[in-house]
Length: 237
Ligand SMILES: [Cu+2]
Image (cartoon, rainbow, N blue to C red; front, side, top):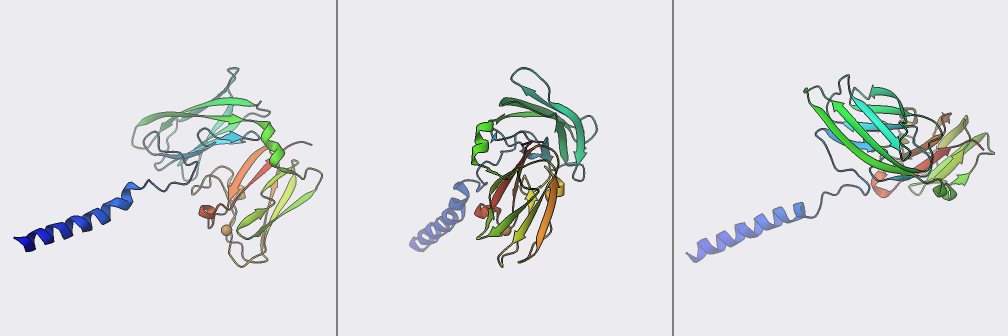
């Protein structure tokens, strides 16, 4: 009987060790959006995020194929609609709405209907804000015709850069760790796909010309967990 008790206690202890780590949260990166509707994974803009300049589009990622008839709306505080075009990209899993120019500071209400290949129509929404005062934390390089962003110590230098439309930005890797340039969000990389690079080894570089005014958040997908993130604002001088 005592041997049985010891065995039972031992099994309970093992079970507790196996279960406990699972209770310590999901480990999702800060700012990640919890799934709100079936098959929704994440978005740009992020839920409740405050942007220093307007996004060029809203991009909603799903883990199932989208169908025609999906829709997005973005309304400003004065009731204006800002979505101009609906696109479906990234192997038909990203629902994108291009945004009009010159969105004013303030809060925006985003709502959407995602029609999925399983026949479901899923409604969701989120809020985001634009506060141009945040542009003070960006290095203003709008006088430059070309801009170089270095990569060293798992950082982009400068991390936040403001450029004028038509500027070529070149990222140069100055260390042994291989880096990537990836548009948000992680891991879908769907916001501005031209800003997705292959692996960049020491001494190698990657360039993008930015034409459309707005904010372009990006990261290195290999070191996202270590906070290797950057942001570019394209704005007229
Ligand atoms: Cu990296």
